[in-house]
Length: 363
Length: 152
Image (cartoon, rainbow over all chains, first blue to last red; front, top):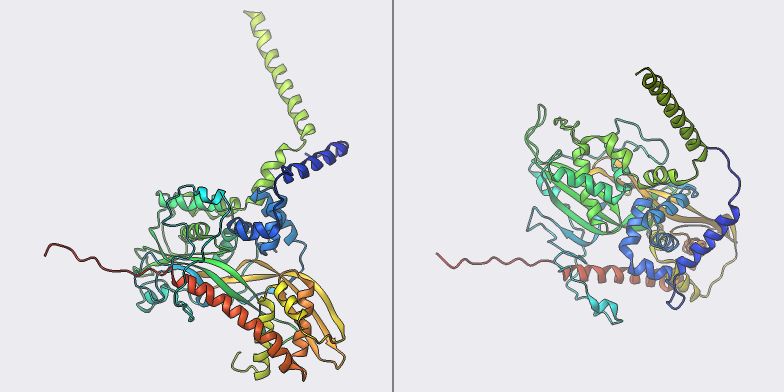
């Protein structure tokens, strides 16, 4: 129950002034610029764009600065800004097969056409702190090889030729949009993917890990993981044709999963899919695993009662802004609520005492 | 769809896409070096908005909503009536204005000058950046070699 309470304006104002001062930190240290955050904390920027559901690196960097590095607070700021933007339209689906890949690996095919391209990865680093970064220094240029100009084909294409993997036929249905209408269950796969791609990385990771540990295990291999830029094309109302309105960096993960077959389908491989703004590899793999776990019904698999198979559970709790909003509201004044609880407990205690006292008197 | 596109539309699609992708400071700096400043009238002043970016399930299947991106658009008309549209990535109103002006000029008889002094250098710059990343990626491509076992 909410009751309007007046007062505290001065305290709030002063608290926010102090917040601004604390955000700045010691003035003996140079202030961070938005460009520094965008360029040097780019994976934090990517996470804020993915979960804020808005691709704009400068805005995400600003949000990180304003939120003092609290990424969920930054995501909140981006979500709030996003709601103020008029929607110009929807893009044509991005062609990830045309991606200019910075990274492209497969855990299933060693000799995939296009090769195993590691890109700027943390993999194979020793995870030892590098104290050289604590000192200023020049970074040597990265080595260059012969650039590949043609697009890199998707790995699943090769399995598809054999008919041994479930097909993903192109559909032209307009997908549901959870920013426009509330989530309804049972949900279609496109809506689930939208929810997962903007879902909290930690939550989606935890759900994915639960499937690996045996709660609806789905035996996933990373068929392909690719990171790079794709053009975004949209039909322009003023013109009779579509133009590129920009390009976005994406991480795409396709898992290849064992499938014993069902009453209607022969044994074959099935797929889980992850597509996330920015270089967001962990999130993208986790998304693909959870997507696959949620597909049990359409694939005729058993409901094992695992949390990752429960779309209502997964999708209703994946959004960290909804979660943090509801969680954190309990710290705001609930004086009247609590007052009534207090009255109730006092009354119950009084009644209990009255019940005991006559009994004691009789003994 | 593309098959039916007129040749001039294909060319326009290409330069508008380039203008959308180029970083705003680069575009504005390049325009600053260009010596034509045509008069124009606004048909639609620059406005910032969002476009919902879509993907496909499994890369090829049904469309789904991935998230939005910021876009700024505007439309203007030169004194001779030529209409230019700017649809550019990001929130820079001056970038959208420059893009719309270039789009309009590219349809007039100064198009060759705009092409050689603005469009082509920008296209080369974007291609060079793309090639540079592709070259760095190529250097991280794994070369496998098979180990020969000692025993027979």
